[in-house]
Length: 323
Image (cartoon, rainbow, N blue to C red; front, side, top):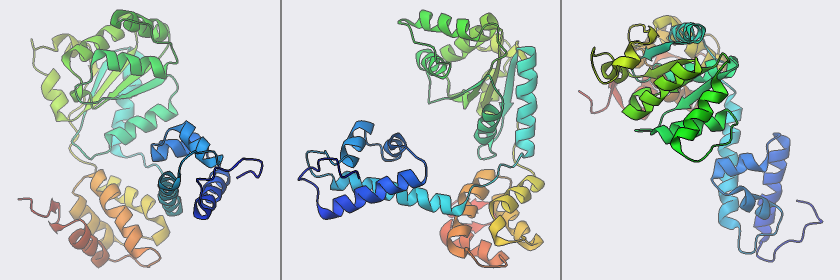
């Protein structure tokens, strides 16, 4: 903390130590105070006031939240980034997105939970210009959806639902945009109808991504969403799981620091994950790193121990208590 700042008398010596630690961490990692505000859910103005030494009351509680948030972030960074693996799930999704953009149609991509649909959507969005991704909230209304689109397109939001709709159409028209709506099965009927009209009037492609419930929603002929279904240009079969090759590649990439993974270890991981990228990447990988970091070689009994003692899996593919 700069010595030129006037320190509030509410700060203890411990508080000042934490302030300096936080400032050094942010500078050392090239992060802003806005980043810290997002991580701690403390208003950015309050974060700046505290770190400038000008908070009028005791900042101890907020500083401890900052310290804890940065400690967790340091642990994540120490684990190292997991390289992106283009799985078969993602390859198919990318084909749907590319063709839907080219044909300015509607694409449907359905898959069971845990196969990595959202990860694939985010990767496609990050690597393909003029792609906008919306992560649907439960029963997302047209107004919320239009506000999200306007925000991502950097277009001021006018008053009134129809004016927002027309502003979105104007911003998209004449360009090669693709809109991806993740968890589209959560959108209400009016929202899907607005998306259809955006596609018709702006001439852009829209990919609706969701679980098998999305297929159940749109598939019936002469149903409520018949007009959406009639504009679908590509709709592959619902994807139920990642492949064994996908699982092996994900495991190797995520656990590369543990050396070559034996066939027996990969077999054991596959038996427990049973085609779920989520179980593998969010269940096994972080726990293997936590409990067996630095141990080589990784052995099947290590996987069994994580499954039994941490994830409470009684038999491969089932969690404790499931039948």
